[in-house]
Image (cartoon, rainbow, N blue to C red; front, side, top):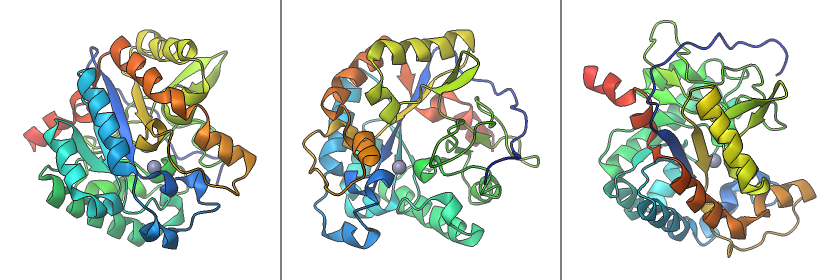
Length: 300
Ligand SMILES: [Zn+2]
C-alpha cells in the first residue's frame, strides 16, 4: 500500500489567481471515519439528522462573507434531505459528489466504485437540477491502492476529482502525489485531480487544507501557511471543512479512542468564528470557478 508511487509529475493547469477554492464535505457527524469505531453503517437510519441545520449554518456563513463554495455531498444525505440540496444550489453553490455512503475508495472494487459514483451523480443531479462535475473520495481515500479511480470517474461523466491529500497520514497515503492540480489521464488531459492544500515547511509537506488541521492550529499559523501557498507557490488554496465542525452541540459519542475523540471534538466551539475570519481574509469561490472546469464543459 505504500512504497513505489504511481503518481506522475504534476502538469501545469491554468488557474485563477484572484480566487481560492473552498469546499464543504456534506455528511452527518455520525458518518465520519473517526466515529466508525463505535457507530456502524446499519445504525445510520435510526439517528436523528443534524446535517441540515449544520449545513444551513455554513450557508449563512457563506452569505455573510459573500463567498461561494463547492459542496461535496453524500448521496445518502441527498435522499434524506433533498430540500437541503436544492437550497445549496439555489444559494449559488456547486453541488458535487462525495459518494453514496462514505465508503472508502480503497475498500471498493472498481465495479463497486463505478456503481457508487454513478448512483450518487444521478441522485444529486435529480435533486439539485445541476450537472454534477466533481467528486471527492470519502476521507481522501484515493491513493495508490486505487489507480483505476480517475479513469472510472472520467468514464462516468465527472470532470474533476478533489480526492487526494498529498501527505503521509495514518488513514491514507499519498506523500509523493502532486501538490497542485494535474491531469491524471493520458487519454483525457482535460480531466483534473485538484488536491487539497499543502505547503512546504523545512522541506516537509504540511497540510493547510482545513478540517481537523484548521481546528487544531492557531488561526495565525493556518492563515500564514495558506498565504505561503498562494504567494510562494502561486497556486490557489483548496480548503475543506464539514458541517458537523460548526455544530458544537452535536451529541457526544462515548467509547471512542483518545485519538478519535481528539480528532473529532477538538475546538468545535471555535470553528465557525475561525472560518469567518478566514473567509473574510481571502477571496473564496467554487472549485468549478477557480479551476478550468466550466470552460471544459462549455467547450464539450
Ligand atoms: Zn467525508
